[in-house]
Length: 312
Image (cartoon, rainbow, N blue to C red):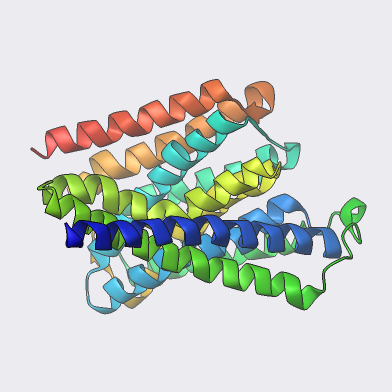
């Protein structure tokens, strides 16, 4: 009984840190956007996306440094599937997300292009060092694109109440809260599952997958709730681009790795299909509505159930 209460405490503290961390991260990010006239979408694509993707980046680079490039790549693919299927799906179910015309013309095609490139590379059966350099070059282009389209003059000076230092502090502390909260929640939940006799396979397919995506999920839900849908959508798109170009590129540069058939015929096609599906969904009504969110979530659940089925 003591062990259960101990781990429930971990879960509870994790949820509190995730919620408050996401709130601070979004508050600081929105404040920066308003104060310096930066588009909310660009803030979501960069600042929020990088903050929520930091745990995956750190874990992936550590795996690559230890020669586990395939595990690192699996984290990239799994995270991207979760970002669109679970996170965007749940966020849209809570509140429909309007899509800006610039996002339809630039950011979504950029994400699809990155997904296509990594899929093409995968058919080589190995992601080489020079492929990693190409992906990193693509990331530099992405950053240039964000810097070029960052300004939104209509927003500049809208929020002058908070100092830049305070807004940055919100972002940094919020990001740290997300990372620590996700770790505590994941540790407590996994331990509880083991105490209750749930198999390692179920734990890895559900709790671990959810745990690594909790920062993105928390940030996107809070952004949607605060009526900042551009940040929520930008977080998902930006995280996917970060994962493929920066994390994937850095992994291959540090440790070139082989691609298994599971990635080529299962993981990557699903990742690409979800990215491509986002385009017509967004174009149709210029928003990701509750119906589209429900479809994404249903597809994600189907994928997890199917993946578990073929592995057993």
